[in-house]
Image 1: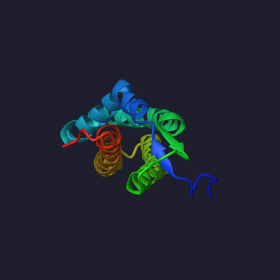
Image 2: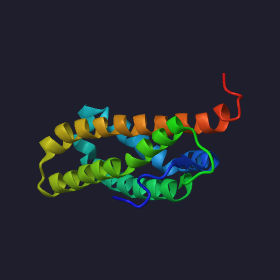
Image 3: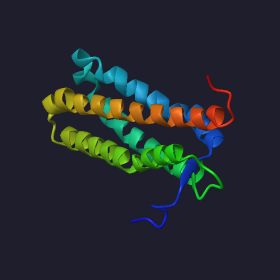
Image 4: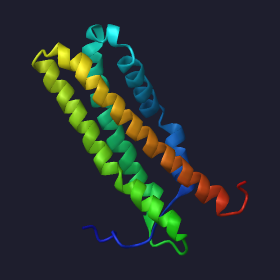
Length: 159
């Protein structure tokens, strides 16, 4: 267990927001994967593209989550609401499982490509990718909500 596990956690909302705004490559990769997986009729023609996109997404998520954890979250704030601290802790804890899932998908795609298993690569794998993208979107929406709460509700300007 980490030495930080029981310490209060909060976010650097401005930095976390900026990370989300400037990481266009990550958002473009996600959109490309969503589009590709949504076109099953052309999947066979673009199966190598799927493998490459998943590999690049894994790399981007590693960098994105590392930056978020290093600069977007911090322990021992002077003051933090218990609910906000718990939400921050839960969202930060999701990074490792999300990265691991993306890494497994990328490795599985590469193995299917090497084994020339076009059927699984173009039918089964896209379902897993879609499920992962839904989870990633849910996570990112949660962080965006946390940023909003930190920036606006804490200073009393939210509706």
